[in-house]
Length: 261
Image 1 (tube, helix red, strand yellow):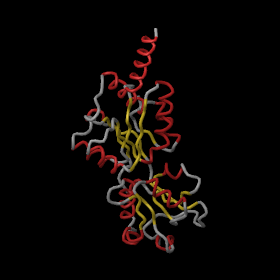
Image 2 (image 1 turned 60 degrees about the horizontal axis):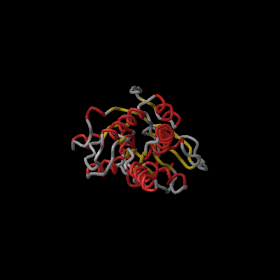
Image 3 (image 1 turned 90 degrees about the horizontal axis):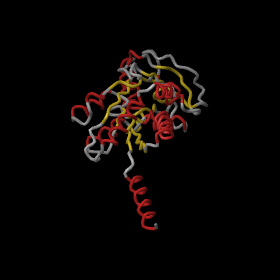
Image 4 (image 1 turned 180 degrees about the horizontal axis):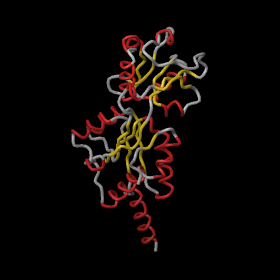
């Protein structure tokens, strides 16, 4: 009887060690909705979901070097295509999941109430002697969009030497939340998630590339996946595109694209 009990315990432990898991690499701006979606899914299906958040550029580079991601959600097309060209993405799984907007924010206690975004704006006056926070304008998606918008409005030359560039959009938001800067350019969803900043203006979608979030499965050669693992991964990938997940994304200010199933 004791031998049978020990065998049962061993088998139970082994099943837990080998339980199916899914690793999601997602843009930092997706932290709250992905965590909520994952929590809902875990409750229903008991799947182990590992989440990793950072700038899309950072995540894409990690995946290109063999990081154990199963799913990647980027905050722009560029970094997803970077992985496509490296054959790290399952091509038929690539789809457009969400869209977002770019906004100018200030600390909630700022005397500024609104700003008219046009080429006549004296943004240096609005900054006073402070800096404008956003993501790194060379590789972080929110910074890339911010640079495009500022160039479109003929404001880039006035502010390019006054930037406080962060590693991701949440870090840029934190600068404004701590009143370390008078202004920041972040995603609308970031601004809506915080009680410590206020939106002064929304950049026209015509001033920058579309802010789309592509979703795809990753060719994860580092993990030995069983048929059961692949099935669980497929189910969670589809869940991210479901009406249930879409409702959660919308709660956090994202616009869902026409891919709900």
